[in-house]
Image (cartoon, rainbow, N blue to C red; front, side):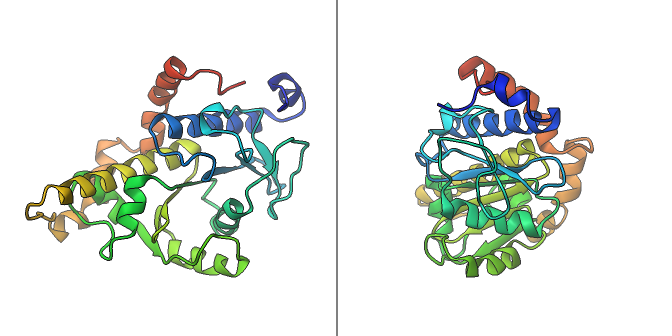
Length: 255
């Protein structure tokens, strides 16, 4: 059995517990939105403090089951720091550890294998400027070619290079990835990434001529997004409401 909330909260900081609760919520929301791939994708979050520890899903636990206390704490090499009956998927941490090490601002890294995301990642042109949802993504999007299941540490420099300073990374023939300062920011970025891919697949399925949004509009989108969110991140704006929805539909993530 996973550790109880009471046993963990007695031995960890309030900041770590808050990170655990929000990361567990992100996992359950991923399941609620239908982006999970059984147990085979990951969301990781840096533990506040100087130790360079991270939280990741217990391998084998479904996303809608994950709790704050069941998350596994690991070091930068993917080794468990605390006792846990669960293992960690090595392929998951290859990707996540590379990005956490290279991007100090990437406190949370989220990766999905959603059907729509993989479908668009397999298209030669990738994500197209077909919707309002796509514009914020395209303004900060990198591309990484598929190299097989992410087990090879030699791939890490290329992942880091292809992400660069972007928020979004399309993993070709594989899926989607977002980074954020918090689980909220990474999750809401993924919402727009996934929505843009879903809209593109549906628009293409309609069979008609597609109408791309002109480049000058894309060039000005970052400033417009800042005006709409009133200077806060979209994650900070939306997260409280998402937690209320989760409390109604799948409570218990904070255990």
